[in-house]
Amino acid sequence: MARTDMREWQVKRRDRTRQLIELGGLVVKAGLVELADDDRATLYGAFLTLAAKLRGEDREQALVLLKRKGRRAFDSEG
View 1: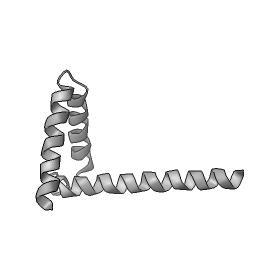
View 2: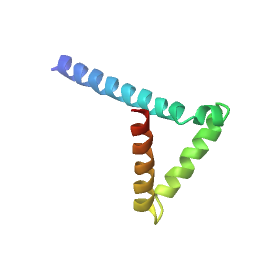
View 3: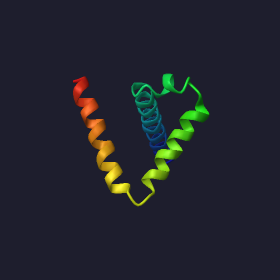
């Protein structure tokens, strides 16, 4: 039983690590690291600003616009 729990924990940890790496890759891909001079406080502030917008009344409209823009960027990279 403990062995199964450990494997499950390892799989979850690996999945989380993969997610974090992919998200970090998106930050780099968008050019945010260079634009913010690799300043973590600036990047975090930008994310907090976006999060506040997505908590607002225009959440659905913002999500549609952001998703559309992101898909277009992915598609153009082909």
